[in-house]
Length: 328
Figure (cartoon, helix red, strand yellow):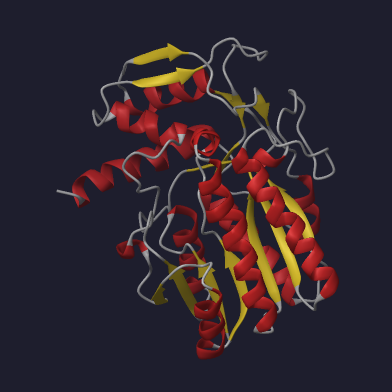
């Protein structure tokens, strides 16, 4: 039996592969390398290059490798881009997921874990959300993910497929052993951008919007270390294997930090007073999105190990320095 990880050459997917391989699991990675890197795939995994939305391909992989569980990371993730090019997001996220789920049903896959997003909540106010908070995504990105959540619920009601949905808040940091991290050169993740600016890889960075109804006027987000996020995936997989019911869970610490706070933390960690420009809001950005994370703790027994913004920034900064050496 094997676990199929779609998008396993990407940032979060590659960390999932490391966790599974470290646990002795047979892992198959499916990635078309459009945004991922083949060098990021752990050597203990089986790599199959291709598109997660290719139903015939996935159906063949299920038979070939004895896949009975799928963890689905592949997709597009940039909110402003989704506003400018919504059809790309409905193709890469919604349509791809639909075809992948079809292959899973045809192949008798038992469990399906989907990486969703806090963007399904939309404008939430300053209070932390819970899983039952009304959903009102503000961007095609959030809507494309919510559609997949809805498809999974409908399919699970009609077929013997159990699923887990994890709604990510802002993922950052890197594997403590520097085996993987956020490697996309021009990624839009705030902490990565700030670290790259501190290292001189960018001339400056921008703050998009300083007039939000938040304590300092900039957006507030709940930042979660990628290692803690992946630990939640592993616990959810264990839950489903034990016969647990399908479920949807927020992955967050319950503590929000503003853009200004993140910038100051990166400045403190790096010791560099890099240039920061202030500009207008970006379309699709809510003022604040945080979550309690209580359900993950209670249902899965999830105990975060890296719940510290400075520690998250330190690991992200160390990874960016590592990448500079690696790419020489």
